Image (cartoon, rainbow, N blue to C red):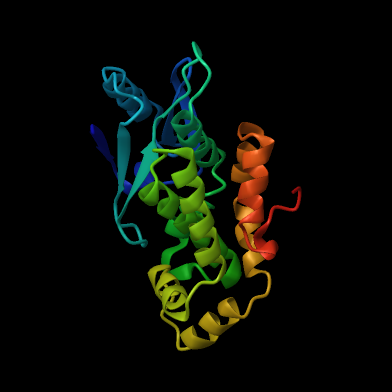
Length: 238
């Protein structure tokens, strides 16, 4: 598996809403929108020499700018136009589609930007929901990597359920990682845990992914997937 690591200054490498840039017909590479144009061009030129797009992963290394240093893995999707897509093709495609929409990543750039001032003028639960969306994406990518449609859907279902019911320990760690060190930490954790809108927010955060899945899957597979979700997590358009 080939990797391309791109490391840049904080102002250039900050991860904001990812966008899909076409390498060629049927190929999409996810690059952070915040990168300078010349850096994006260099990245494209380097990756243009790779021929194994179906399995390659691009790693973007983010410097520590108030958020834990992180390596986000973005799959390069391949849906060859010369033949109908296979199930693994579809699995990779919907991952890339969701990433390109920026929905699963949430407003990650905002989380980085505000650091220790994250909770001034921003609702804590809103920030947690963004982090939950990022967590869902990471879990799905780690557990399935688009190897098969069924493994992708199984990983997505598990990530959705666990993220809709976050543990106290996990929420506390997220809040600390976002820079909050106040004495009201436990109160803030309780407010997030007790927020009845949390499960609904997970579905809203994944709305673009659900729409992409709905468009790509057969009706039978789509119905099977949605029926396997707890009722509170099912997309509103099911």
